[in-house]
Amino acid sequence: MRTYLSAALSAVLVVLLALLVPFGALAAWVDLELDDTDRYLAAVSPLAADPGVQDTVATLVTDAAMKNIDVGPLQDTLGDFLYDTARSFTTTEAFQRAWDGANRTAHQAVKADLHGDNGRAVTIDLAPVVERVRQALIDDGVPFADLIPVRHTTITLLPADRADELRSTFRFLRDAGVWPAVGTAVLLVLVVGLASVRRGLRGGLGATAVAGAGLALGAVLLRLAVAAGRSRVLGQVPSDDRDGASAVYDALTASLRTTVWAVLAAGLLLAVGGGAGRILAARRARRARRARRAGRAEDR
Image (cartoon, rainbow, N blue to C red; front, side, top):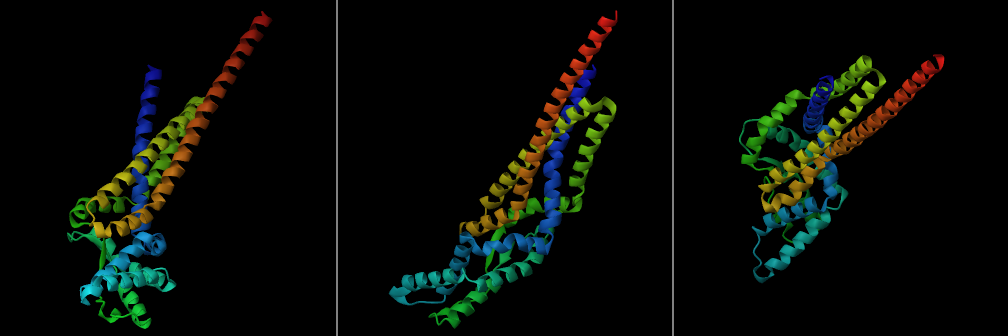
């Protein structure tokens, strides 16, 4: 009976940790990264050098300009020229500064769109970036650059219907904050500590192995959640925005993917180390019992 109870408690611990790991990681991610302007900017700032983002910006600038320009048979040639020129500008430090400024300004709007009830899509407004591109092209004497309109030009991160589905989840995770992650660590320490006190070294090592298995399973579930979220989010993003949106999504979830590998490594280390330690401890205990029995036999 005691063996069955121990197995049942171990199974409960594995399931509990497997669920707490992704929940805790996602809640901490929303609280510490998505809701923090500096961390958000640190995540998306390198995207200024991402080819997908650069192509998206150059395409948006070119398409906006060509709607106001008509040069007859030279239309395609001029479009290619404007695209190449705008694309070249996206490799400069000036574009990096414009990208950082636009995203710092946009972060408050992104937070409002994610956590509010406005029914809008979640977007990044590239109007400040387009303005910098336009001015740079004018300064370089690029023909027709002054005809590039500066209006709200956006990359869609979440279409309106998908955003509505996820807003309640984001609010719940934001309210939970870092406490689920803290709770996971506390649970891990308590379980291993209590097992060590009640059942000695072997009990503590066994609990460590079980907890490690739970952590590893939780890491796998977190990785699946990130992948599923990526598929759901990008599945309805307009095709013209998809490269830029996927780059932003991957940048913002990079810390989650790092967490997956860290927790998986820790879980496997605990599982293998705890299991191996328990086996060695059991062997030592058996040898000690045999030695005691042999000693008693000699005494007789």
